[in-house]
Length: 113
Length: 112
Image 1 (cartoon, rainbow over the protein chains, first blue to last red):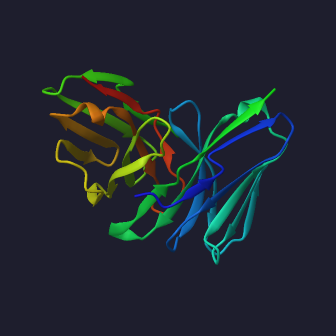
Image 2: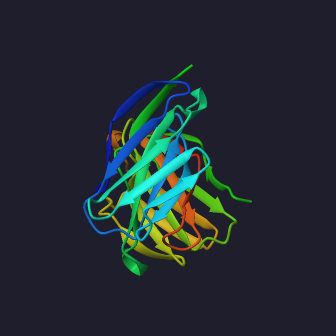
């Protein structure tokens, strides 16, 4: 079952612009992670934000987490054509024998040169 | 070495065949995962192994049979699959739970 719902499903911007993607989820989480996938191959981890954190930065990435609204956002600043990919949020839930990492529906980002 | 290696990269199999997908990591990770991904859809969790023991089976049909022979290897045995099982199968590992997961490049499976 899917935990996260990304918004928008698709986003097309020009190089140099900022891209913002949102993720909403339904149950309590341990952490929220963002991943990137190029052309239907393996996923690459971008950033992890813990449930007691509100904001985290990594290079051109900025992630926020609002546990009261069960939502997160990923901001990519100064986008490049090479950022074109699908972006997924994933929620860590449970622990021990019932731990799961569950992915949301994803946002397809297209950055036009 | 921060790689998760999956073999084969592509697999075409008939509905009566038996085949296996293989996943290997040498990062000392003790959690390993199988995901199934259809085109334009998110990865769907199939199985979770923790310390070589199966901890999660997301109601996956028995024609998919996972195996974790040791802490570095994860197999997915396939038998009597259906055409709708055609998908990208992704393996992942993580050091422990609640940490980043590393993904392999996947096996693109076609059932004919």
